[in-house]
Image 1 (cartoon, rainbow, N blue to C red):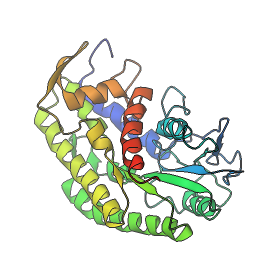
Image 2: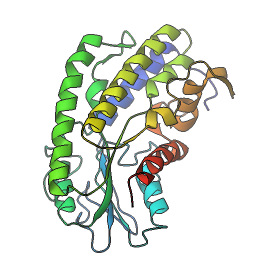
Image 3: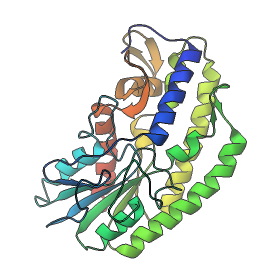
Length: 302
């Protein structure tokens, strides 16, 4: 927790900087023992033997943390949990920071893949016939550009215009993955709401935080409904962070009483740290995401 609180304007400015970094960050993924990563072109994405867990999406799928740790995200945590029942399991982590539904099928300099794009690389891995399951978390970066930082609120017209496009692209992405291997379980995912941290900025209107949370929920609902319409189970990351719970008040060091959803963002992400706000989860935050994915995955795996 931070020792001092920044002004509302300063926090918004920091969120702007973080989002801009997230949308265009050059953060190469790196492999570990038992894992394979191609976002930085370090090795082939095809698993050498056994079964693979294929992690797809944006910076959360890439396990990004601002402290430089890219090895303790939900991909690694879920991989380690599933190894107990699948000892030969390998992690193939293709997530790329800044990825959007309209970039996953395009070459991007931050994340070069042998097959050219994240989607093409995923299709190549799926065609190997060795993927045990996959996770897909994408869409939040598409909507961040609809947040008007000077006003501290979402542009509703922009969101309304953008959501149908995200849905259409998400449908195309999932269909491409399904065509590569129709039998592989794929878990879709929602997002926690990092903008809830604006509640802690002195002078920032709390009613705007609530209004922004309603928009964020609508975004998550669209993602969840799209996945469900495609027959994919959905990990409720939004629920794991209690993102809708403004009613339960908990005591948080140096902040006093906070709504539970705000407290969890402050405690499980880097949005309220002394070193500077960042929208990504801490290792503990990634653990909360892991639990949500594991619960959902447990219902579809043999």
